[in-house]
Length: 89
Image (cartoon, rainbow, N blue to C red):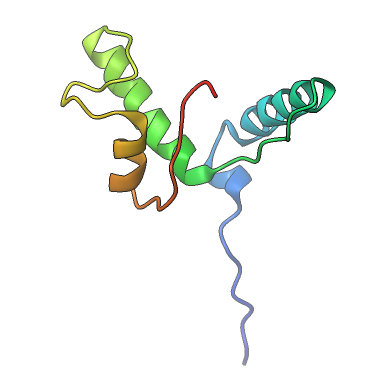
């Protein structure tokens, strides 16, 4: 008997999936309206960002740097990312 392999659904794995997609769609819409290229959702960058947000909440601070002094592109790289990333760009 053959079984189909089914990849996990991002909707089931991430309770904020629809909200994330809506935010990216609105940002892309605004960028295109202003002559800029649209953006795409990057799950790995989002995961690294989520971990940073959780750290900031737990330790009551707000910064692009984490408590170890790492910037967004450092955290993305250590999460397995291979391209440069920026926040608020």
